[in-house]
Image (cartoon, rainbow, N blue to C red):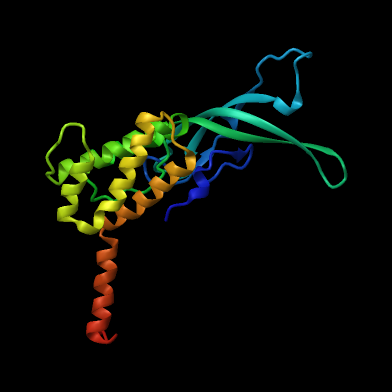
Length: 237
């Protein structure tokens, strides 16, 4: 299931979430402590303000599955906050704000039955998610184009909406998610920015759609429901 909290974009300096491995899709990426590097840009004493202190970081993440051991490069900014604890002591906390992950950890699981061209477009969105959400939204829109190509829906210039309408003639109950992805992609194209919440919503609904359309999860569950009804719950031994 889609775990939204993994992709919120702000993490404690020593509390990275369980990013899934982009290669084996089974392991979890663990930070290699020996590669963690943090540096502060030069600021003169006259200009220094602890409330606006900032730094850059980089590190490698390693898949915890020995048979895989994929290596992922993570870089970004560090922001700092200061507050007083219950005893009145000044506490400083640091947050990692990733801006690049190569290769990108899979934000959603793509069913193995998904056509290769569709998969490639979705996977290409994972890395740019951190640095350019508009580009990530555009790549999701591109994946919708690839779905329609695979279904034999003819190209109609640069117009995606009428292609989705033709797809809906074949699959009436599958249209809305593709239409939603089209709108998010349009925001990325024309406004040059997509909010993190909107993009995560797009991934979440796409995750559900892919599992049902290509993964056939709903069809498999419906078949089991019908078998239970037909047999009145009495299976042979």
